[in-house]
View (cartoon, rainbow, N blue to C red):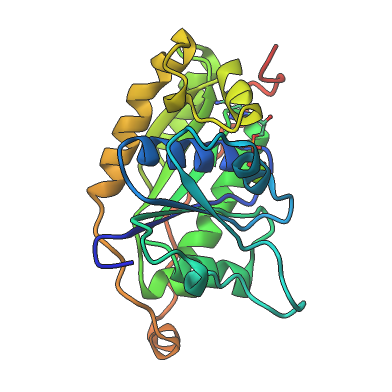
Length: 256
Ligand SMILES: Nc1ncnc2c1ncn2[C@@H]1O[C@H](COP(=O)(O)OP(=O)(O)O)[C@@H](O)[C@H]1O
Ligand SMILES: [Mg+2]
C-alpha cells in the first residue's frame, strides 16, 4: 500500500441492496484494468468469500481478505494489517449491521464510501437513515471522505426510477453510478465473475460503461488523511441536511 492506493468501502445498513454485487463487480472492473485488487469480505454471510472461491484462475485475479472471521467477540473490523502489500485497490464488502465501533473501524480504513440504494420506498427510507448515521458519525466528521450513492437495480425510464432520481437529487451526497436491474448480475455472481468479465454477453456489455465511469469517479477523489483517536475527540457534531422520503414511491416488488 502506498499514497496511490485507494480503499473503497461499500456499505449500507440494509441487506440485499447490492453491496456484494457492487464490491465484486468493482473488484473485477479494477482487476481487468490491470490493478492489483484486494477484496475484503467484512460480512459474516461471507458471500464475497464464496464468490472468490469459485472465481476461475484464468480471470483477472482478485485477492480475498476474509475479515468477517473474528478470533474473539470484542475484536473490531480492522483488516489493514492483513492487506497484501501489493494491493492498489482495496474494496470492502461491508456488512449491514456495522454500527458504532465497527462502523468507525471501517470508516477509518476507507478513502471513498459507496452506498448502494434500491428504488423502493423501504430501501430509500433505510438508505436515507444510513447516510445520516454515516455523515454524523464522529469518525466521518473528523475526517470526511467522499461518499457516493449508487442507484442499483434500476429499470430505466420507469416512474420508480424517476422518483428515486428525485430523492437522490435532494440528498447531501452525489449519485455516482446507476446499474440496471439485470439477470446478468445474478449470473455473474454465480460464476465468480463480474459483468466486465462477460464481454460475450450483450447484457453485460451494456453495463460495462457504467463500471468504467464509476472507477473514474473513485480515482478522481482525494485520498483520506489518517485519523487519530485524539482527532476524533476534538470535532463538534454537525447535522447533515435532511431529505424527505417520497411516501408515494411505488413499493411493488422489483420484478413486477
Ligand atoms: N443490478 C442488479 N440486477 C439484478 N439483480 C441484482 C442486482 N444487484 C443485486 N442483485 C441481486 O440482488 C440480490 C442481493 O444482492 P447482494 O449483492 O447480495 O446484496 P447485499 O450484499 O447488499 O446483501 C442478489 O441475488 C443479487 O444477485
Ligand atoms: Mg452481501
